[in-house]
Image (cartoon, rainbow, N blue to C red; front, side):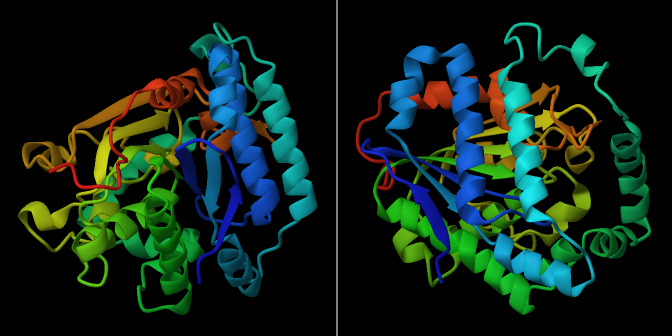
Amino acid sequence: MTKTVMISGESDRSILFVHGRSFKPSAGPYLEILAGAVAAGVEGDYPESLSALASVSKALAYYGDLTNEFLAAQGQAYDEQLDVSDMRNVLHELRALDRKKGFSVARYDKLPGKSAVSEFAASVLAPVLSAVGLEKPLVSTATKDLGEYWKRDSDLGIGMLRRVRDCICAALDADQRLLLVSHGTGSILTWDALWDLSHDPDYAPKYADAKIDVWVTLGSPLGDSMVRKQLRGADRKGRERYPTNVLAWHNVSAEDDYMSHDSTLSDDYKPMLKQRQISSIRDYRIYNMAVRYGRSNPHNVLGYLVHPRVAKIVNDWLTQSFGQPAHRSLL
C-alpha cells in the first residue's frame, strides 16, 4: 500500500521527503511542518523563488504509523500533540534567525545543552565496535525500529521499505522533475528503495533508467562502515552494487550530529562516479541551530531544512532549466 500525503502544485516539479526513525506525528501535520521549513529557508535567502517553490508539489513517504505502533508495543511512550507543538516552536525560532550570522559557530556554541559527546562517542567507538562484531547488535538495541528493519523478513521492515519504494515509484510515474530529501535513517530506506528500482527484476525494467534530479541526504549514516554492510547491493560488485537513478547527490551533515559521525560520503561512494552511475556527490558540513525541548538537537530535520546551505540546493534546483523530464532515459 502506498502511503503518500501530498501538497499539490501546478508546476512540473515535485519534492519528496523521506523521514527518519523513531516516533513521528501524523503524516499531514508533519508534511506541513517539513514544507514550511523548506519555505522558511528559501524565503530567507531567495525570496524571489518563493512563488516557484509554492507551485511545486510536496509529498511525504510516510511510514511513521508503522514505527509508532512497533515502538509503542515495545513500551515506549509518545505525545504527538506535544511533539507537533514543539516542532512548530522550533520552526518559529529558526525562521527568526539572522541569515548571515544566525548559523555561525559562535552562535552554535551558545545553544543551551550543546554537547559533542554523542558525536564523539559515535566517531571513536564505531570502528572499534565494528571490528569486534558488536556494532550492529548495539545499534539494534538502542534503535529498535532500525534493528527490526534490518531483519529484512520482518513485517515492519518489509512495510517500511514498501512505503518508501512505492512513493518514489509514484513520484517517478508522475514524470516530473524530482528533488528527493531523506533525513537520518530515512536515507537507508531510500538507498534500498533506489537499489531495488535499479536492479531488482520486479522494478528495474521500468525504473532502472528513471532519473531523479537531486538526492539530498541530511544527517545521514550512510558513511558508517556497519551501515554500508547492511545496504541493498552490499554483496554485489561493480555497477550492480549501486543505484543507477540519481543524477546529483548532496550530503549535508551537522557538527555534533551523532547519526552522521562519518560526515563525508563522496569518498565512500566514489565508484559511482568512476562507473558513471552519478554525475556528482558533494558533502557539506553545517551547524544545526535547532533547539528541541530546551536543548540543542544537531540531528533535527528542521534545523537542516532551514539552513542556508540546504536553501541554496533547493533554489539551484528550482531555478535550473531542464529539457526532457528526468524520468526518461538520458540515452
